[in-house]
Length: 170
Image (tube, rainbow, N blue to C red; front, side, top):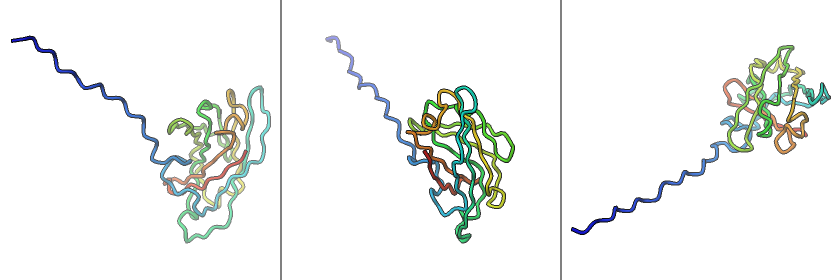
């Protein structure tokens, strides 16, 4: 019989483009974004701290909220900031109620990196007027270089990750 040529193989599978995350809006989790909330964060100061670092401070304000909504009675467990991808590790440390907190970082994809300051363990009664400060360092030693596209978005998140009021400052 005549020689046979091997059957041609199908072309190799092309790797699919990664799917965008299920939650494409900051914060990148399944919490209720911008529910009624007793919490807000207000930037109070930025100051040069040392060579190539800036100290950033803000205060958690507590406001009246209709307690018929579950988000008005939640705790405050963490504050997340959306940062530029290249700023991973740029927040050296934060202080909350005199305690040092080291941030955790997470990326949900390109342009979707967050710095998380956790274990705040606060309630509306204990969070009122509490100052949060953090120190930035190279390569993101200013708010405009740290924050995604120069706008500092934040989320105030409860322990159960149900409620996450957000805001921003520049």
